[in-house]
Image (cartoon, rainbow, N blue to C red; front, top):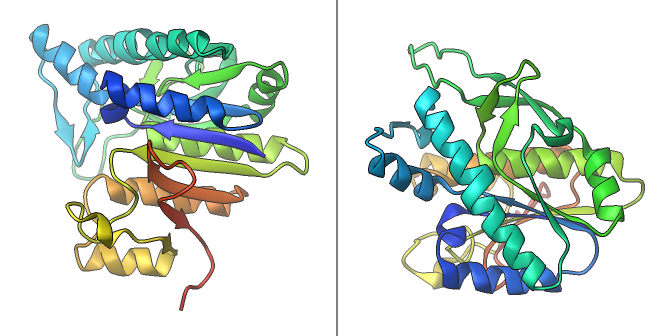
Length: 261
């Protein structure tokens, strides 16, 4: 089993939460990779430097100044902090972006029909799962920041959930007879009927259920693209997808293509 675990910015930016996550992560057996966010830290640094952060539908508008900020934060501060802590825990980790080893190639997102220009935001074209498998086979844990490149010298800011799905799918396509599990780990126990009530955890979720819960407003905001990536991952050959929190990597909500009705 190969595990790809994506951890959100709310976890990596809180030292106690990150400690809990990394303690659980190192106990996961077998080859594994960690994908992380860091948007809150990027927003905070931008504010300190007097650079306005603009969001549309939960997506960051990334102009040239903002690209410098997210590169410093994602590939620098957040990534290397995680790598250093994993080394402390006895794990030989390597911090990477999509540009390193040509891991993840993307193109700049076109202007939307509504006229929204997201700037230096990347939509993924391809990822090299074989390179990641080579690293993991050598006992190295890839720690991947949410930056890609366009092959023409430009870095691109790319959604971390999408990076995780892309990486897991690329590994699944390159691995021979080895199942791949993708886990989205954030601050809530899983997909919730009511985020303020832990008893409303949805233990299993298929795509028809997801569409109904979006339509009635139960699932909204950033959970929608997270789940869209989860279903895309299942369709691309990943054996299991889970959404959970740092205290229960084996629990939370299992995402399934199977009918539950």
